[in-house]
Every structure is written in structure tokens, then in C-alpha cells.
Length: 183
Length: 430
Image (cartoon, rainbow over all chains, first blue to last red; front, side, top):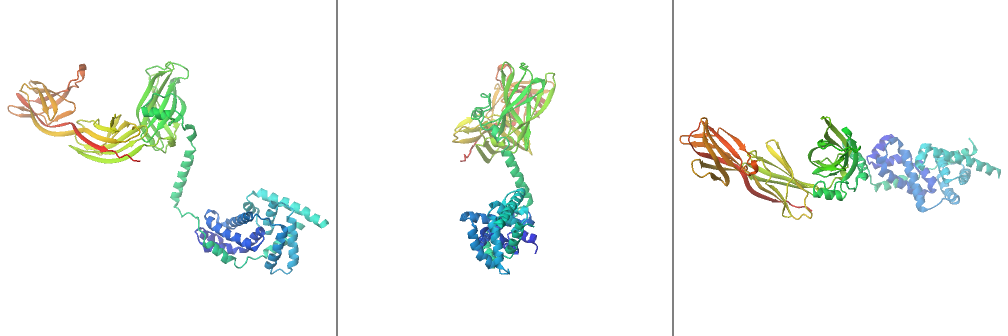
């Protein structure tokens, strides 16, 4: 069934249609939630929160095609508000500790989990060198394949700002990556 | 692709392998169960449009001119209008406008402000000559006719203007109109200006109006009380009291109203005191006379309010003979005075001059002669009874063609101002 029809049904209050829409992209949502929350438990919590908010507000959505980018914005907002509530900063150490277990759990199909994990930690360590905003923009763009427009909506800034955050962040990352090599 | 982007791409691959836990669906379904849609029910398009229009009106309306007008006295008009109006102006309950419009002959009309409520609109104006030339006394610069606006077409009711101020260079006045619609944001004042060259110019000037500043009504009471009169029925429909005026509305369908056309017998009493009526008017629609009578604003606190139909035209069958031969000249016809002033016989017939109260009309008059009964041929008013400073009864000449040797006048019935004394206690709401 096509997305637009499902969105229209969901707008009329059909809960099953909404669930179907979310389940069609469940992995995408989950990965996004994981990026912010860092653990499955919180990621599932924010997804619960997201689906309720989406259901309550879907009548405000004007363009059915925009459902996914719109709902992702809601998801990210849920993530941020939960993080704010927990007043928790996900430090790289914690992140690694949690991620090591969780990523390992989820990477069932990866042939060489350890090298991948190294790679993963490597980039996470690098990302610590840049600002949270730049990090967020780069993660959303490169790890979640979101376009600038969606990122702008999610992070509530202009497309220009997103572009500059990405390019500035990348510039810094390159600098630090080179520095790492020289060490 | 540089190193960083490669690393990111590799990381993406890892993340892409990440799968949502299987229990996600059941969790989400559970979360959704308790959710309530805040979706508003589907509203038909027409209603949406109406709602949006209303919203636009409300928003633009409220932001329109509320600030400029609030709580300022319209200055220079301390002695104009009724006491109630003067007080309201002193309390700053009017809307100041202070806009100047140049007219012909070098004269300016300033609209100083308005005080408006559900019964009337009072407009305060000043006419002055900016060049300081004396205003010639006999010219009428401002002859108002009406006020128009959105859903508004209000007739001119009355006006009052000052003597000349500032050494004959300024005239101040107020003009009262029927009430304007609460939906009007701008009003147009229509008036004529008599020009110095003898011509007359029609003007139509617009000024802003803020219906939010209209004064609240004190009371609006539907009465719907009908009385049966001798020749028809009389109904009090409603009474509406605002801070500036009290208006009683009603209607009557009375055959003989044209004989004695007065509404003066309608009395309004507040706290036991009679309130003197101002203007009244009637208009005929579908055989029914609709009327409204204006009274001044009601006193506060208001304890009792009664509306009375004290007198109104009545009719009485009398079948009375008035002797023209006796020495007695003054007769009582059902309590009404009739004086026989003169009886004369001419070659054409008989002329009888009678004097009677203007509040009585004798009907079915015939002349009884020795041989015959001759109906009235014609009658004419001889005088109004008011000349030469003497308060005499008005005289009427009755002519009976071809009659001779008159003996008496026969009167079938009379229309007169009858005491009905019907009283309504107007219920006073909270």
C-alpha cells in the first residue's frame, strides 16, 4: 500500500495505518534513535513517545509525502527531550561501553564485528573533537542519509546553517584525522 | 572520497545493519492504544471559510483603532446633549476622532468624536474658519441627513448647535442619528452645505468608528403586551435602555388613529417618576402602525419601571341630539364639550358653527329639521382656537346643503382621547 494512502488513513485516526507506516521504516527510526540515545532501552522509549506524538499531531501534517521527514523530526525532538530530562551527556566512554555490547548484539550479520567496532569507535572518537551541532549534522547526513532539508527541519535551523555545520565539521574532522595519523 | 568520509561511510554500513528489536511493533501498538487523536472533527468547508472570515474580522477589528479612542473626553462639549450624555462624555466614554475635513468657502468641519450605543449615535462636531474670518450667521454649513457604513444606514434624528464661539469664528454642535451597526468600522456622514453663492453642495465624508467602544445596553426587555382598544389593538413590543437613550417600541392597529393621532398618552415612569418623552415616530406597514418613542436615559439605581398607556384614541357611540333652538349653547357629549356658536340659514342651506375640543371628533352628524334629517355636506376648520393669544376652542363650520329650519344636530358617535390607564410593570433583570 502506498505511503500517501496510509498517511491519509492515519490522518483520519486509523492507528493501524500509522503503525504500518512506522513499521515500514522501523529500522531507520531505530537507528536514528540509537544515534541519540545510545541504548536500545531509551531508543524504544523515545519511539513509543514518537508514535503517540505523531498520532496526536498528524492532522497538522499538510503534505502526506513529508510524513517520514516530519516524523523523524518528532523522533529527534523526543530524543532530545528525554536526554534533557535525564540530564545526561553521553560520553564517549559510556557510549563505547554500551555500544560495544549493543552493537555487537545487533551486528549479527557482520563478518568481522571487531574490526567494524574499531572503525566505529574510531569515528566516534573523532566526532568528539567537533561541536555537538556539527556532530549531529554530520551524523544525520552521513550515517542516516538524510537530506539537508530534513536535517534543517530536525535541528530547527536553516539549510544554510546545516550545510555550513557539515562542511565546517568535516573540515575539522579531516584536520584531526590527519593529526591522528601523525601521532 | 577522503579519509573522514570513508570512515563515515563505513560507520554507516555498520549502522545500516542495525535492526530494530522484534518487540518494537508490539510496544508501539501498546503505546498507541492509549493515544487520543487531537484531530478536530471534519468541518464543512463553508464553515471553515466563515470561521476564517470571522477571525479576520475579529483580529483586524480589534487592532484597528482601539488605542486612539479609549477613555478620552471629547473636549469642548460640556453643555451639549442630555444630562446623561454630558456625564458619559465627562467620564471619557466617548470615542474621540478629531479629524478635520475642509469644506467649501474656506470652512473646516471637525468631527470631534462620537458616543454610540444600541439606540443612537451622537456625533460631536465643530465648524470653524481656519483663516479666522467670521462665519456669516445665516448660512447653514452643515445639514446632516444620515450616516452610512457596513450594515448601517442611520437616519438623522436631531441636532443641537451652539452660538458662535471665538468671536463668531466657530460653531460647535452635536447631531444624533439612529444607532449604527456593531459591524461598521468606518462610517460616512452625509450632509449638505449651503454655499455662500446660494448653491448647495452634497458631502459624504468618512471617519473611523470603533464598535468596541459603543456603550453597553442597560436593559433590553421584550414586553409583547397587547391591549384591546375600542377600535383595534395596541401592543408594547419592547423597551431598550442604553446609557444615552431609552426607546419603547410597539405597534397598533387602530381604525380611528387618524382622527386623534397622538402617542402622548404613553408614559414611562422610573422609580415612580414620569420620564418626559422625547421624540416619537410611527410608520405604517401592512396596515399596522409601528411606533417608537424615545425617552431620556433611565436613572440609576433603577428600582421600578412602569410603562403606561394612559390615553389613546377611543370611540363611543352616543346617538345624541344637540338642540339648536334652546338657549343652552354648551353641551356635554360623553364628557366632551361642544359649543354651538352660530346657526345661520342661507339660500344654499344651513351653516352651523361649533366649537369643540381638538381631542374629540364628532361623527355621523346630521341636521334634524322640521321635515327631514339631512346628512352633513361638508365641514371646514374655521380656526385653530389659538389666535389672538386667546386659548379658545377650535371652531368648525358644518354645512348642510338644501336644509331649512334647523332644529337639532344629531351625533352618532365620537372619537376622543380616552383614558385606558393600562399599566405594565417592566421586569428589571439582573
